[in-house]
Image (cartoon, rainbow, N blue to C red; front, top):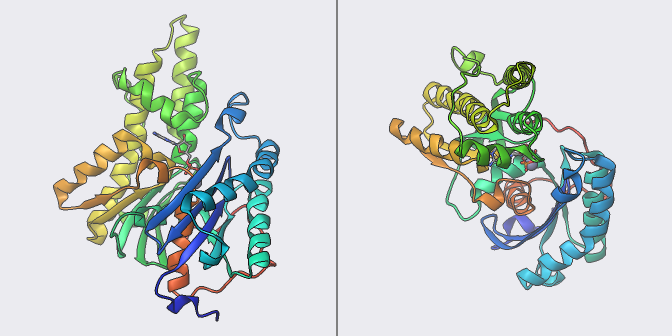
Length: 342
Ligand code: KG4
Ligand code: ZN
């Protein structure tokens, strides 16, 4: 025990490098962000149509020192003000994660601070605590490039998985559909842009569940539908309407998420709701989620900057771990490509 748990105020320096964003943030008491620096590699990976793991690792190595320095400068803190170091240890790309994990270990050792290992998914959930008064219990729809799930957050550290995807994640489906439509990576924001100019004229498949016991997500059917539709139109010599296909895809993809959240809300009776992960940046999803207020639900979503990958959410998650009595990770911490969701 380092006594940190009982301290009046806890300031965490957090590092995130699980995919193509090198990020560092300084977060006070889980809800106040003193700085949030993100060096994105999107432009570097765009020409390959997706993230190239080896290139991601190298660029994290190049960026990490200056990103951490900038986060400290912007927060106007020195090493004395930092109570703990937090780092994403998984899930993600192993080589990419290792850059953040090893840098965090170095800092923890050099400064003599406790080190906490944070799951990336838990970080996405914690994004909803930033600048908000959200408290468990609540249901969270998590939709990112790697995960699609509904979880019941019973307590800050007690999370129960209610439903997840049987195949592709929602964000992955956005990225793949965008690719077929000739739109750049990452596909989510591009599809959203095109969908605004199109009409949802294609009736795309939405899996239906019968209740909480059989609640799941599936995006491979929707992805295949888009691929086949584009090929069929091309074979007939017709130019596919990218805007109409994007609008139809987005409607079906979002409907599936909202249907699932509605089933979970009705079955559990929990009306305190949140959405998180990269796809929660989607305007249509936010609008449809707001519509659940019709059932008396209160829906939260993170500010746009905290939806996609960032370190502030990792700092927020670490704070609640510390307050709940989580163990320090120690300097033998290793990175993990996969981490159980709950
Ligand atoms: O959470 P995130 O940054 O990284 C992972 O943990 O995967 O999520 C990235 C995913 C990508 O698939 C991206 O296309 C999607 O989130 N995304 C969106 C939007 N912004 C990002 N999907 C739909 N609409 C958006 N506006
Ligand atoms: Zn993420």
